[in-house]
Length: 258
Ligand code: NDP
Image 1 (cartoon, rainbow, N blue to C red):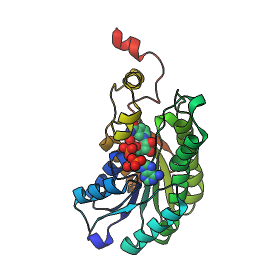
Image 2 (cartoon, rainbow, N blue to C red; image 1 turned 45 degrees about the vertical axis):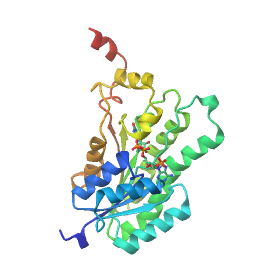
Image 3 (cartoon, helix red, strand yellow; image 1 turned 180 degrees about the horizontal axis):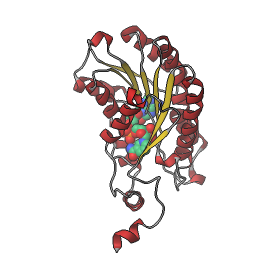
């Protein structure tokens, strides 16, 4: 397919980690990729490292700021003229006891993890519809599937994002845009290294049948599938990519000690 006609994905939080792996997966599939991120210097270094100026467009943007999101999507339209997929990946983690979480911390986590996907989808959907439809993938978390300690803001934001996914799927599916989500288990990114203490890492191993963290590429592969024609009748689903965490309850540690 000639580059000029190739599809376009917008990935938020793509300067590093899971978002960057997603952008790389789409570039490998001959799509063009827009990398949105709040961290300008890291984004610029990432874009230089990719070395794909014709196909990869970095844009500095805070997904929680409506004006910045609007400006960013205007730039995408001016440069590429179409949007075929949006991956709402940008997120921030705060692991703190409930009674110590300040209102400002709570509000910022909700703004980035929940309002960000709301705003970016509202900005991208009209462009997708002009091109005949598309696909949105929201990056949730296993912390939104089951409640656990220290995650009052993060877990609540991700649980709400799962419901936003279904709301978006109901209305946008009717217009030609499929909306799904991926709920990753733990992945060894900069975010995880910041909030996963040795005790938390051990807890994850105790709760995951595959007994390991996932990789950025394993999450990217699921997103790629959900945006592909192979997933053409999948809409409104949260796909857990978590080594079996969501599927299992107690007993793993005892099983392993046997
Ligand atoms: P990282 O922190 O490694 O990367 C996220 C990127 O998003 C960073 O560059 C970050 O910039 C950027 N970002 C943060 N806030 C904004 C914003 N308001 N607007 C635009 N960009 C922003 O995270 P991961 O790759 O680990 O996580 C990606 C997604 O996957 C998140 O939604 C996360 O919740 C989810 N997830 C991650 C898991 C894990 O174990 N890693 C597990 C389950 C879900 P900056 O550093 O400057 O904030």
